[in-house]
Image 1: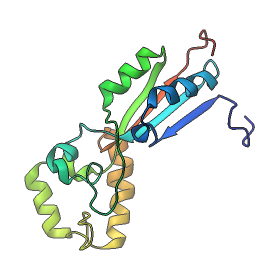
Image 2: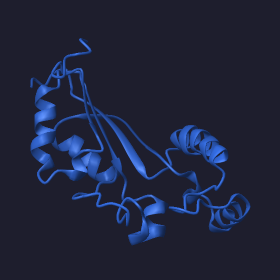
Image 3: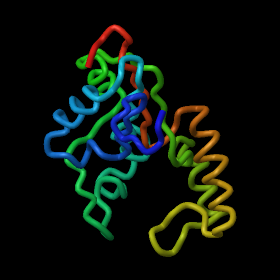
Image 4: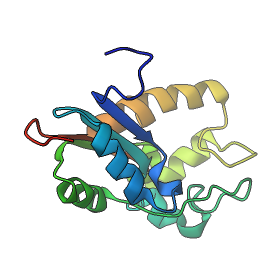
Length: 166
């Protein structure tokens, strides 16, 4: 693939995009149109279903961040993205979550970890110490969350079947 070519169609990415679009359907249709048969459509976005979204409700930073207006117009979960793939005749190759693991732990364990490791004064992110927070983000929220498919963001890989012509 020519790295400078944006319309080659082997891979089309919609990374944290479709939830901001008034009419995401036309963008998805355009992405599928430029996607070559056998190509991959990658969509990532916040997932409305994980424990973090349910626990924090309107205080969840991806729904209502007091520091910024995020502009999320649409919400998705696994089922809605599976429906999207089916509607457009795409093969769902992989669907996984990734994000903060702490919200998938029992409430008692969460409380204990927060007492031991603290929270950031501004923003209240888990783990006060910056170095420990980076290690946690890499191993717990990154590698482990991806292996277990836990987290507040969903990553979907859909394949355009070789028999469908765009």
